[in-house]
Amino acid sequence: MRALLVLFMVAAAEDGGLGFSDQTATSIYGLYTAAAFLGSLPGGWIADRLIGAQRAVWVGGIIIMCGHFILAIPSNSIFFLGLVVIVLGTGLLKPNITAIVGELYEPGDPRRDSGFTIFYMGINLGAALGPLICGWLALQNWHYGFAAAGVGMLFGLVQFRMTRHYLGKAGRGPDPSAAPSDRFKRRAWLSIGMSVFLVACLLVAGLVGWLQYDAIRLAQAATYAIVAVAMLYFGYIFAFSGLTTEERSKVIVIFVLISAATVFWVGSEQAGSSLNLFADRYTLREFGGFVIPASWFQSLNPAFIILLGPLYSMLWVGLARRHLDPSSPIKLAIGLVILGLAFAVMIGAAALVAAGQQVLPAWLIFTYLLLTMGELALSPVGMSAVTKLAPRRLVGQMLGVWFLSLSLGSILAGLFAGEFRADAVEEMPSLYLQLVVMMVGAGLILMLASGPLKRLSGGVR
Image (cartoon, rainbow, N blue to C red; front, side, top):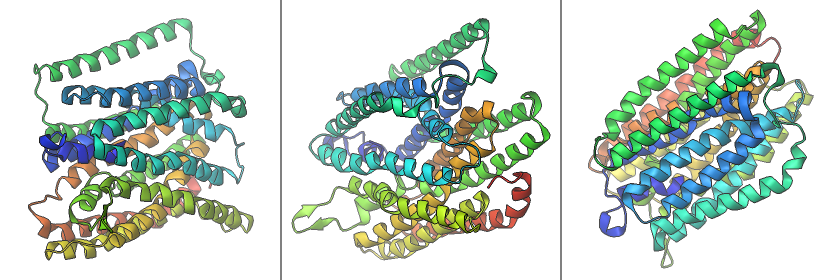
């Protein structure tokens, strides 16, 4: 479904779209993806303290499905209601399905990184099929594509319910060591209800015209807000969560890894925005009388994850058996450098576009291949590292903070993507060069810091 959002928002009204400018559409896309990941922080807390990860995943999936069906209603104003509903459901589902995977492995189990890679492959199976099905249906009507995403979520819920017993006790209930009192639960649910009511009021105020929202300024303000939330959260954890000295050291490592991941997502999240528009506007897509939908290129990343995931899984296990497995910071650094190489490819493609040419799909295919190679070195390994380093009572919340890095990265990615304007194609090569410098530079810094981080990790790789 995400593959359609920017394309739908920039499409002309006579073509069934919203007719937004590139800057507005990419800012809204960044806000949407950022909010979905930001919701992971309270979503992880709700599971940790109130309902458990399995129930959070089930309820979150139902809410997401409802959001997709709302998007299927052919009304431009109700479109934003659907996005908000999906955001609420994603906040419950994303961190907690990851936490369940972490609980399937004992501490120190060398299969953990490989297990997360396999999990990552499963998530991306739907991500590969979604753009193909939804993108084709969207050619007939944009809202058919959104409805198809809701049907896919329904099938996923049925499968989860039928196979839930295989999870055993993983995520079945809140952490017993942090069991709250009944009074705490009542106050918590009251706070959650009031927060949802406030969001609903702000949404209604915007839909009826009482409030006017500027997507670009809102995205800029949200950037500062998310950074403030992250700083306040880590300050709270260090000051009031009763961490031991060893736990403090490990939380510092988590903070560094999350910071590095944020930089990665600024580049990686260009896939749904600037790279999506590049496929639509500057890529030759007609072959033998058939025009490839631009959204189909969004299937490349998850398809490559499915193909390469087993190889990465075997690589980490093989290196671990030979005591050559790189530490998590080194793996994340490798991911950043590879992503930088992906945007180095786009410099060449952008140069051809700036010269007035359209480019072959091979440029984007190779870019997505490198992007995927970097993602497989960083994302599943990063999630695995968080579950290994975080105190047991804070695993869900720490995974929520991991997704907070995705939130911040998505907002920054949306703002950066707005610079790829259709009326300034000559600036595209320099913009991709900026991404190369950002990714490679962050990767090299993380490599240099890997030694001290390894010591702070206390033997956790």
